[in-house]
Length: 106
Length: 172
Image (cartoon, rainbow over all chains, first blue to last red):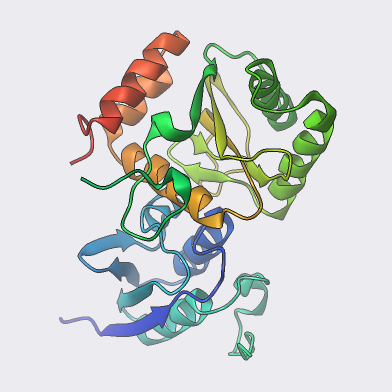
């Protein structure tokens, strides 16, 4: 049975890039979904549920990434992660995980 | 061949361990119980190595601890990267500590931390900090390198492993 796959493009906007704190927020948010989630930068593909892996992207401001989710909640996962990548990481997405109340992003 | 990114220039450049780890601030067989103890010991090693100023020592330790309150810098695989920006340094400086016992660091994966990289960077150089994290995480994905580092019993062993990693002897 083929599982749904969703891809979503996201550009890093935070001036600090995906440093340790954003990587932790991303990995925690990703871990709250059942789907397998990967983040892709050019040819480099990493597991979004691992802080260590997310850090290897070395994604600074302006870096274009693709979030790819595969599984039962793939659509919501790709959307939520892409939104977080594009945010300024100033608040914890896990606190607003129910519903789509997360920041309006400016 | 590209220059190293220590000057904070554009994307695509990489940073090596020898570009930011201070050889005299590597400690092995560290016997500490708490997160604060290990952070203090590592900051002190940078102080002794002349890479941090005595006047700012407490401020630096406090800033690192405050950063930990935001969320642990334990990144998994028994590794942590406590860090802060601080105006008293004019280049990125890093220390390493190895603890055989392990330190409870509230890591996301719940594992104790055995290998720590402490980083202090100038506030206006976010790119260097990001590239140092990228380098550390990329190299540590290699399980052999990670295990060898944790098993190192002297600072010289650690340094030799870092040099080998810089020469791409681990990363695929």
